[in-house]
Length: 408
Picture (cartoon, rainbow, N blue to C red):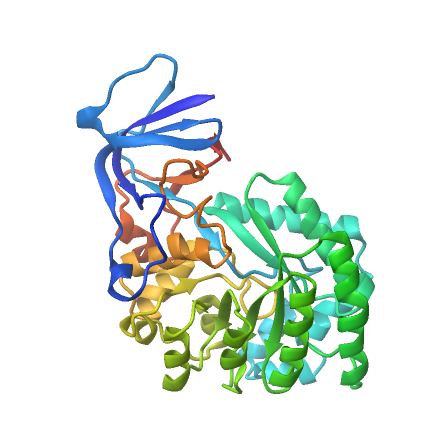
C-alpha cells in the first residue's frame, strides 16, 4: 500500500541516511520541515518534502493531517519487559522508608521476580509480555530491547529468551534480545552460578540463537568487575556484544572494563566520575541514562548535561521493569530528562529517537525520518509540537502511531 501524508504541520527529525550519532552541542538540533508531506511505500519511508513542492499522485492513498506534527517513534534501548508479576507491594515498602538494598535483603528485588518467573508457564509469560509491548507501542515506541535476567536458572533464562523470540515473530517492530543471566546471584555459591552462566546458559543460548547482546549488573553486592570480564570474554566467543549495567549506585571500574570489551553501551551511570567521562570520550561506547529508575528509586539522575557538555552522545531509555522503573512511557522519559536532567526538549528527543537507534545498532532502520527507513512514526494531537513531548508530562500528546505505515 502506498500512502502520502499531506499538510503536516512539522515533520520532525528529518535526516540523511549517512548521518552519524549526535554528540555534544549537535544534540540540540532536530532538523524539521514545516508544512510538509511524507510518502510511504511497502512499509518504508519513500520520500518527503515541503507542501510548496508537492505533486499529487492518484496511486497514493492521501491522508490529510491538517497541520498536525509527525515525529519518528521512540527507540527504547533498555527494558526488562518480560516478567511474571508487578512488585507493587515493594512500592509500598519503599514509601515506608525501605531502600533498594533493604527490600532485596527482605526477600524482594530481583530474586523476588526470579522466584515468580520460574513458577510461571511460558504461555502466561508470553501473554503478559504481549500486553505490555502492545501498550508500549501505543505510547509511541517503535523499536525496543528486552532483557532476560529474571530467570536466574538455565531453564528460566532460556524460557525468558524464548518469550522474546516469540515476540519478535508476533510484532512488526524491531526487537533486540539481551542475555542478562548475570542480574543477581540466586545462591550464596557465586562460583557455582558463574559456572552455570558460562558452561550451561551461554552455550544453549548460542545454539538456539536467542540473544543479540550480553549484559551484567556490575555493582557492589552483585557482580564485580572480574566476574563481568569473565562473562564478557565468554560472550565474545558466543558472538554476543556487551551492553552492561554499570555505576547505578557505585563506580567500581565497570565503565573502563566495558569499554575495553567494546561495549555498545554502558547503562545507568547515575554515578559518573570525571575520569570515566574521559574514558568514554576516547571510545565508541554510548552512555545511556535511565531517568525513570532515578525518579522511582529517588536516587541521583545520570548527569546528562555533563555528558553532553563533554562532547559525548547521550541515549535515554525507560528501564521498564517491575521493581525500579515500572513505566514504559518514553514521553515521560523526555519529561524527566528536561525537568530533572536539565536537557532541552530537542536533546531529550534526540536521546530517545535518533541516538537511541545507535544503542541498538538499528540506525539504518529507525530513529529518524529518512528515506529507506521503516515508516514508524507518531502523529501528534492538534496543536502539539516538539516541546509538548517534554512539557506535557503525564498527558497523552499522541493521536496515532504508525508502524510500517499501518495504524496501530
